Length: 438
Image (cartoon, rainbow, N blue to C red):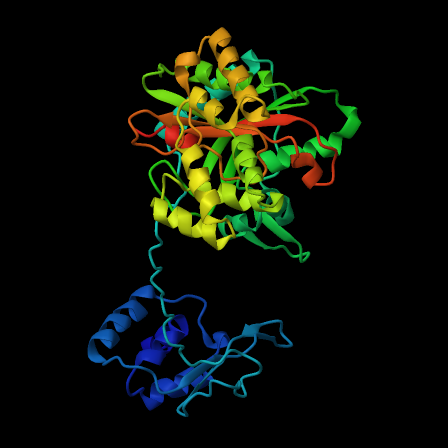
């Protein structure tokens, strides 16, 4: 057998790359079958021919197609394989008459897309916790838990995703702009929790009379709030909450402040580093009552007053006027809010009201608990959330470099906001973002 024939049988697809194939070679390609092969071939024949053929031919894109036919069996049980070469341009949309084989046209090489680099930073206002930061977080949470259990509190937790109405009803419509909220696939309005207290109230109502009062619960949970970022304020943070449900006396607030002081002491923080500003919502109530300001205005006034250290006083006055507070009431209110002494407050309001009485009792208990040097009276502290009803307090950095470290107060009427029975309650929230600031 000729070298040409043996080469084409063993390397049939090489003919695709010849610019001007020989007629004799095409003839062999069209008519040669396996049954014409001898029993043995000398590899040296076609290998030497392969080398010579590659050296003498120019390579280019083929102008014809190659269609392998199906294997068929002859009556003598011998198999043959035949191929057909065509000088016609191949069709990409249909098969030729090769018996259902693939089109022989060469496709263009695949387009390789280079993947775009993603932003490797976490979303704005959130954090990663690599090992060194995770160790710090774990140590901090461990101290949260140990202090809580030292004071006899039990740990609870709630879903990160809650009904949007749970937070709007509790904090007012103003909170809606700060929520990560959306409709789920069931067309329900839901939100990532911005704080833990509403979830606590929901759980207390759900449990009803199956739990005995007082309840002393604590939680450490992730919270989300879309707001302007400052030092120590993030859009995602973890929060330590301690709450006492079912105790109407000021002893509950005194115990909560004592637990935070204990936590600071465990971390090596002293009264020269951190203090607590203490006041009562009832101070504002008594001033507004003197000027016959409707009770439904109280929440709006508290939200405005809570900005008193954040925006100029003229803007505070302008916002109070816009909600319907008279100029005389505004002047009286700002005068009271400037008071930093409990004795001075008593001169203005007298000692008959609940505000002065509750505050005097709290300072007396602080003396007995041993943390009187940690707290000070400041009438401007009202806390911006609408549900507080009595004593409120904030932990602050004495150097004034950081925002409020923690805060809380009494919320005796929160449960009725969600359809439950009013139960005396108070608690605090302590974020992890401020305490880890250098």
